[in-house]
Length: 177
Ligand SMILES: [Zn+2]
Image (tube, rainbow, N blue to C red; front, side, top):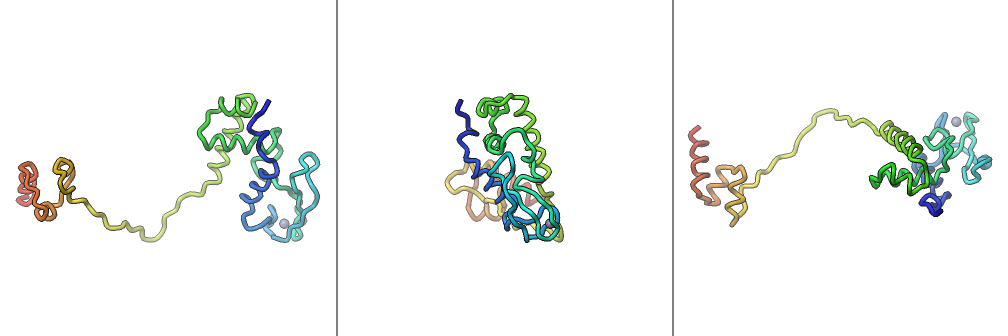
């Protein structure tokens, strides 16, 4: 049966993961050193590149320390699942598209959501926080009905010469109080 994950290029999936986790070039997952050399391929997944760190000797591969490591489902299935989640597709529909059991999909989407939440940096504001000036629209020329619905600044209302009874009353009340 033809499924979305079978149409996805596995090599591209690995390239994508590499680009996302190491945008500045591959570095050691243990010490962060950049002196990393390739050390053969993964025994089960020959596309998965293995590395060794020149600084601390740590050995790792493309998926080490990621949510995709040590999974039963191959990487394209996870990437396809992530893609469909981004389109707001339901678990049941994802299960159909990828020919998976819906319980498995439920597990996958829960873990992916959690991983995304864990990675999201907290928003921090520091120092003096300022707001820009706020402009209040005085009115829409030729659309008195629109103007009536809005709060109008007195000076502008005067200069524009909108003189309907309702606002005149309001203006008087405001200027007297
Ligand atoms: Zn290292």
